[in-house]
Image 1 (cartoon, protein in one colour):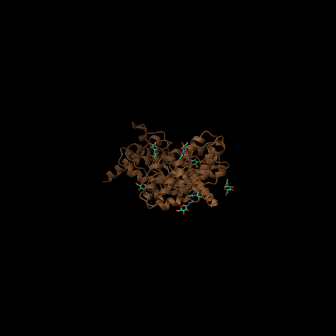
Image 2 (cartoon, helix red, strand yellow):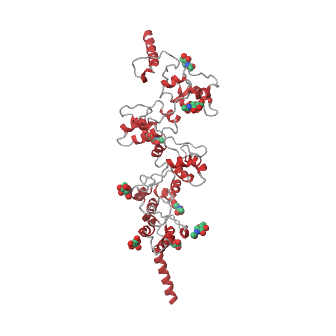
Image 3 (spheres, helix red, strand yellow):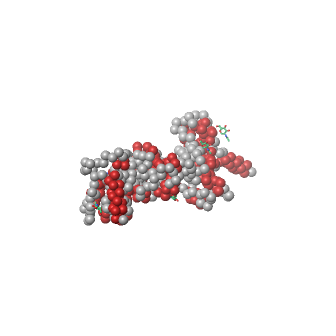
Length: 413
Ligand SMILES: *[C@@H]1O[C@H](CO)[C@@H](O)[C@H](O)[C@H]1NC(C)=O
Ligand SMILES: *[C@@H]1O[C@H](CO)[C@@H](O)[C@H](O)[C@H]1NC(C)=O
Ligand SMILES: *[C@@H]1O[C@H](CO)[C@@H](O)[C@H](O)[C@H]1NC(C)=O
Ligand SMILES: *[C@@H]1O[C@H](CO)[C@@H](O)[C@H](O)[C@H]1NC(C)=O
Ligand SMILES: *[C@@H]1O[C@H](CO)[C@@H](O)[C@H](O)[C@H]1NC(C)=O
Ligand SMILES: *[C@@H]1O[C@H](CO)[C@@H](O)[C@H](O)[C@H]1NC(C)=O
Ligand SMILES: *[C@@H]1O[C@H](CO)[C@@H](O)[C@H](O)[C@H]1NC(C)=O
Ligand SMILES: *[C@@H]1O[C@H](CO)[C@@H](O)[C@H](O)[C@H]1NC(C)=O
């Protein structure tokens, strides 16, 4: 009989012990003054998602008694140490998100869910809690959007780690094969959810002895596990549909070749085109996204035709013809050699010299339709001294040729 009472008492004690929830405000008031204190990223959601934080709750209780805070607060932290190190808090379950939410309206899959989770080890508790709620009967439609990468509602302010451009530079610039981003901050702005693999590997690179291995995974031209994390590229049809109705609109000369010739070099235009495509922003941002970009993108120089690369790549190929005056032709066609520029880039890769005719002055194949303006020969001393603006004067020989061709046609009629 006495034994039964004792057993019941012990059970009751255990139950009340287990049900003593972790007290977030007690943690803050007890521990915030201790060395190495870290606040919970979202304490109440952590507790809601982890009703069974018994080890942390016990050590917080001890910490709150005299002279015990310094020793016991770290055991009660989100990133707990010592006896609570194995009390694993629930983390975001990517396959649960997919299975719970993929059928709900407006569902968006994570881009790189497991990398997002690894990059935010303590930072997804709101999403984790709401995903748990979503997975219970009839709650998916309401709570899935709170658990999305682009979270809404109560989780809208749970910011996920983004790519840190200055950390990349400081961590990686001394490693072998380092390449700086072209326009890092624009790349980050153009890919708000799309750099999680690079973000995670940059975090790893920044830990001891990991830079050489992981920096290439975090590069703009990423390798290894992040090689398939494609960054947003310039969308030619979006440019046309967004911008063609704006004042001063200019179509690209050879948009898709421009994009192919500048695989990493249009991030400013790409970002501003994205902004232009949002409500009421086209008039302001389309000019920044143009081939002849203005404003913040005026300094984002697109690749131009490289005369010495043409000579060194192609001069040994069959049927090679040098440009009559390559640099004058380039100067006369600032935006108009993108097909040749792209194909020269292809030709310059090992075993590809058969692409040289596409890059020639009298181009063949896909570039035959890319009509060049005639340049002022750089050797000539009798440059036109007409009363035209300097940019226009370059076109004079080409215009004269056109006029004389028309004259011929008229004369023959
Ligand atoms: C949590 O701790 C605070 C002191 O920070 C206390 O005032 C409050 O009553 C505690 N809450 C519970 C539910 O025990
Ligand atoms: C809480 O955790 C204890 C051990 O840490 C375990 O025995 C118990 O089943 C857990 N309770 C719940 C509801 O998960
Ligand atoms: C935590 O788990 C590891 C691996 O299972 C084990 O070696 C270690 O002793 C555990 N620590 C505590 C405090 O339970
Ligand atoms: C994640 O969710 C799936 C259901 O989609 C479940 O089978 C699995 O056990 C969960 N993983 C963890 C670690 O809880
Ligand atoms: C998110 O942050 C904004 C700006 O600080 C604030 O106005 C808003 O109330 C916050 N929303 C939530 C759900 O916490
Ligand atoms: C490019 O923009 C068009 C809208 O003009 C859109 O339909 C298409 O999906 C976009 N392409 C990519 C790869 O995002
Ligand atoms: C042009 O190509 C040559 C190789 O022939 C190269 O050394 C040079 O850096 C290139 N110029 C530019 C501006 O890329
Ligand atoms: C290109 O073709 C025109 C007309 O056929 C010719 O006059 C010119 O010499 C050619 N240029 C080159 C560099 O082959």
